[in-house]
Length: 330
Image 1: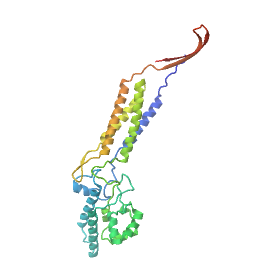
Image 2: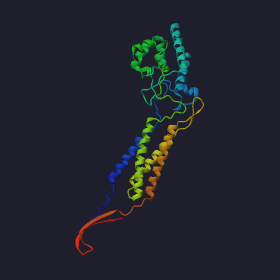
Image 3: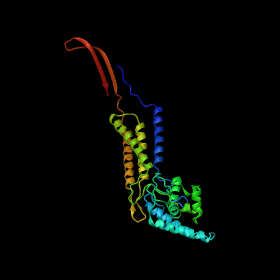
Image 4: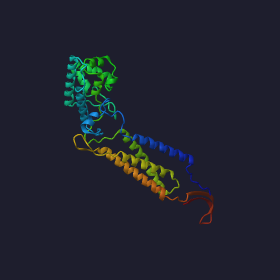
């Protein structure tokens, strides 16, 4: 009788699995951060000072995009009108006033470009693919012509104005009555997707991390069920499942969106992110509970043994033959 001995997970392999899981958790948790510390302000020099002054708080992720842009441009217009221009000549003052009048007309019209080129990061956009022109581009268009604005757009469509080192740009600024820094203060940075009070927006990073956690926890959950069904002494899988389940539930709790009062006084609800967070909380909690039950309730059964033997056997009619015997023990 030759028993088949179950193969147990070696210590080295256990360490490898635990280390790999830790790395996976670290990467997924890092991807789940949906708040970007840089690159989300409406202006590179002034940040969101305009929105804070107008509404008394930082703009929420679901703040209306056009309102953010118009608020910024109105804020900058007033800032520049109130600036000390005593050092300017009468001709420069006249040009400056004309530029600020054009800026007022532009932001009151409320037609602003969109950033189609850079997902998840606010960027300037001189002229977008639909032909909508930015504030500085509009000033160039109205004073030097659309052709000049198009030439600038060909080189610097998504560039910050302070980084535009070009004679064409510098010549226009010199004749505008504004400084380069003041033009950069005007230039907004645009979001990729226009936002309204009921936007179902989920950032790419949160979506990816949720997908990773869900795939891992569904797989581990299936293994937990199999182990509970047949019994095993292996505790590595339920320990990993407990960790990944709690991690996914925690991410869902931390990322759960709060209803915020939008610019129009109405509550803004991010339904898409809320539903994804509920999925993370539910799936993570379920896998953590299943893994805990596997750790606590699963008792190791006797190892399954299989043996076989070949020998003589006596038939019912007393004839002798060859017999093949398989024995399975539980």
